[in-house]
Length: 466
Image (cartoon, rainbow, N blue to C red; front, side):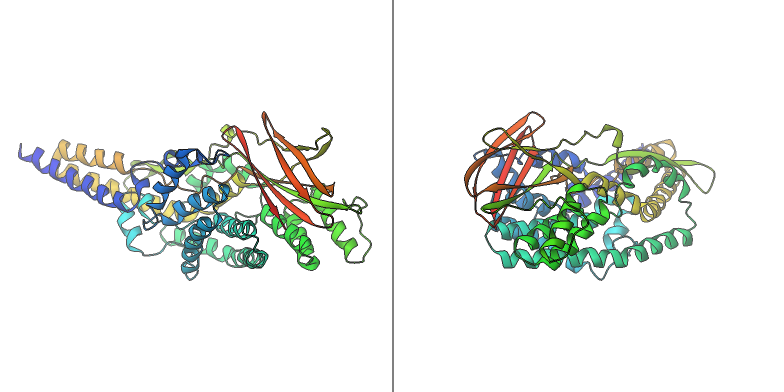
């Protein structure tokens, strides 16, 4: 009875510790994708749906939590898609401020924070969420569209310049940080080959993008904005950056040739997609589905004494991903105006980001596994079978992969461009079985942005007049 009391007390202390840490981040108890499934339901064209306000209120309650960045990303996107641009700006500003505060720290290398120290016997969900590189780029992307929604072209231009700078800065420091993470693994004599082999199935998807943060969809949005506002040099730079990432894109070849022509040079490409006299331009940004969530796999890792420990790692089951659908546009006479072209697979960015995190992830998880294994041995030594049982139960409960990521983002970002005669006209959009109609007031010589989001078996649309 004494041994049982001792072990029960030890297990209670361990579980109480988990509960305290769970107060800081609700992802410790509930896998984040389960929470985000409710957030995704708020991405709907039905603005009268009371569930939207319920979701927004629940996210607002997390504004001061350890995972505030993540919850405000979700809230900012939901608010924006409901045309609540002021609220969305406030949400994303908190995220941007947090990213700015991190600029002196490495986003990949381990650091000696208190949260990481407390995670050694729990899991990475204890560590406050810091965001991924691609999420940082999308934050500024969304903030620019908030300014467009408020007809503030100056504010939008500032955000588009910020996002271009962010991508350059991330590119410059990224390789150094990855190298430092590998060095840390070597210093701690941790063999990365086991995890690298286990993640090899993600190589094909990760190989679809150059890096986890270079986003051709954002480059295209900024380029189209610069072209619409007459800044042709900036437009050409960003179209070319998007083309470097998507070198097979016929649309981007058109765009580069058109800007070259507008600047007075002879382009190499004959199809310029120029508006005729009396026509305006419509640029469509299509966001299909939701970015896939991380799953969990457990990988056996050898211990120093010849044993094995099963450690949970985040993973993407790419074989289960849905195929993204294109968007078709038709005029009111049912003439096809265009078909969208995918310029970014956000899922591929997320996979690339996870692959880049492997060295630091392996170090944290293996050290945590060793600590838990040693705790279990000590519990068995001091408490016998009951001590081992309590420690095993603790390890089972606390061993959980960090599956957090911004999950209201789309699976793919697609674009199309067409020209229409001046005047009010109806344009129909269709993706898979979902259809909607938008009334556009086209002005000659001007550009209109149309955003179409395919989610929850419906198409949500927004119109931004530049």
